[in-house]
Length: 63
Image (cartoon, rainbow, N blue to C red; front, side, top):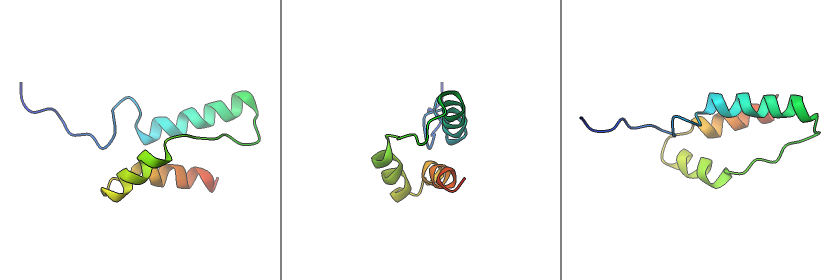
């Protein structure tokens, strides 16, 4: 066994999956807005030059 692969995020919650889950939730519950947690994690990742979560959520805010 070699060294484990490095992931910017855990493979179970990649930015694409985050976007898909938010879209699905907004369509199902017909809410005016959805509050997300995780901002601190996304921001720290951005500071470490892993900005995929930050960019994904930023794009969702503009849709």
